[in-house]
Length: 437
RNA sequence: GACCCUUUCAUCUAGUGGUCAAGGAUAUUACGUUUUCAACGUAAAAACAGAGGUUCAAAUCCUUUAAGGGUCGCCA
Figure 1 (cartoon, rainbow, N blue to C red):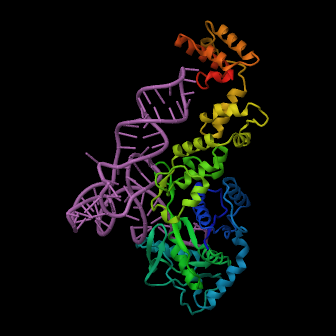
Figure 2: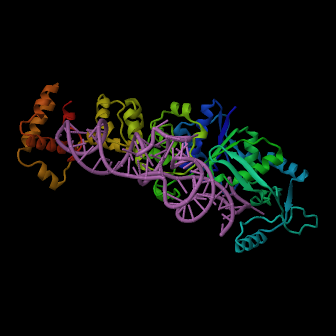
Figure 3: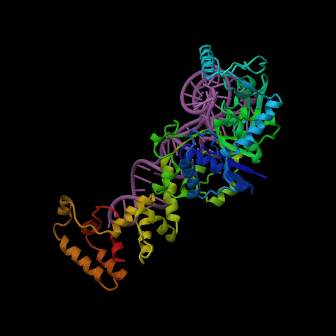
């Protein structure tokens, strides 16, 4: 049984990088007819926010990636974690450490000065003396002191990390609250996760979590560490690079299927295929095919994909979607005609709405300079003739064509330009024949 | 600084020792269709990070250099 999970911490919105790893996890579960679970990592009470949690859940809803079963909240499982802490303490696999934060800082500075990797020195590991007064101890787990911690990563291959690199890390804070690497291992094991798919910024957490798995006697899942998404320059993706919040894509007029198609192709591919429906992704996705290297965010491709999905979308769907962008075509009997004429002119719903408004809303005033140019000469006659034609009870296509067909192509062009300007106040854009339909 | 990971066109990628004088897609440029723009079609340009090996044969294996990324919390 394949069980995957996505485990965000509710400290902000859902990042597109997070969405991609969630997508990979979700696809893996779907592909194997397994389950995809959601867990909220809210052990740090000081930084959690309800709004952030809701925003994340809302983003999942928007893209249509549902989770199976109840959402797990780590904050509600503290009793459970406490049991395991006590168990490790009793078994002598964990111990109380009375080192103060100040002492720790000093130790780190010394190690930095000696150009060593900073780590806890294990001074309380076998402490038998009288503990210092007035210090609330933290609890540290006993990590192996020699040898290698080795694991097989589904995307990176074999990872070897010297045990000396992993210190006796804290599993419970001075106030008793359990820490991240401890609870993640417990939850993943208890939730039955068979595939852990996460960002490779967690690669170094894995040996620590393995220490916990071993200490508690849990079976190891398969780990898959996915490389990061960088910006177009190959640097870390930050807010300065534009939208990183998944929900920003909704307001910018992207379709979720375009975003998902874009993200799935970042670090994963299937031959030369570029367009993937959800069903195809599910059928073809395998975490083994995820690339080792990081990839760069590329807006042009997303835009292209979005334009593709807009063109593919049914009229009904677009009518519904467009309502959020100030265009209501619900009871418009020309909706289909309008959409056919505009679909190919908008890469996003925002652009599409803008094009539609050009048709729906007649200009009431014109820029003096442009209108002088547009309405000079025989413009009045042309427009009147055009208006007459439009007022015919049923203008036939033959009539409109005869109107369009000028012998003199320059004059023809001139006429169309003037007409278009009168209707949309733009000197480029729609085919004027649109108005005669 | 220490440790770990990565490296094919501008970008996403195909590629697992010969079928690669490296394929597809986006973006770019040109031409065509079109009154214009868009869209579409056709074409062009564009890459194996560098250096050493191994081999009859290397983008693919090894070593090394460089560059980029990540991690070094009583954050997650």
